[in-house]
Length: 334
Image 1 (tube, rainbow, N blue to C red):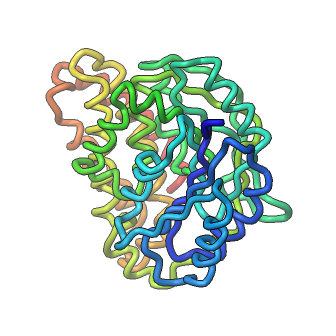
Image 2 (cartoon, rainbow, N blue to C red):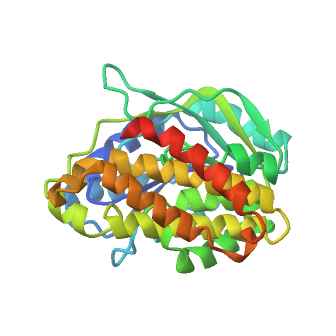
């Protein structure tokens, strides 16, 4: 029987989490499912990763790949598609857990609707764990293009649980576009899955399901050096602004020069999301003694300046209207 689905587990330095997920999930999967563990050249938890490798030698449904060097999260994410051998994949980060019974239903839906490129299922917390990313989505089916882009893109930053029709994304060129974009788009560094979701929504039908397709596991250890985190990398001011511009350009890419009204709407959503993200990150900015109100004002100037793109010529009032809506929503975060 040809393999049908791969549960992909990208992981780095958290072998105890990855091993726990493998031990829990492996007995629950179907005979024509695989589990693929992608170890991004971890320097910690080597014993646990070695245990995963040993299990893979005796169980053909488990594949273990250790990269010779750390490729960065975005390329490890891309390898979920490049190295899996099945038409469908689910991606689950190392600390979380797949829910195979619901995953079976999702695969049936993908088989029933051949232009369905991705399914985002609901997420729940395990046991008494404090919910962090748990969310219940209403059932919804969205057609490729405007409907999917308006609702599906930017829905969440969370990766775990996403189910993709890999065969479709490869056959219609979405995977190739993603690979090109990962090399050119600054947003791809930390959120390659969100960039992919934009590409998928523009080319394929997408769906939400209310059933829980993934459980979030224990919270990863907190980052100790907040000053370093606030000064460099994807959570710094510069990193967040690069992400904003990257997603802006991704929306420009899928909207083209003809659907300006959709681009304006998506730009407004993008402004709202990143104003909120900066405010949620404000604990990092305390290391710079920056007043959050001043941060809000400076971001407003930046976002309006970044709207000075050719596609918006002649639509300044419409852009300003969407931007004001974004500001109004974000004020609750100040």
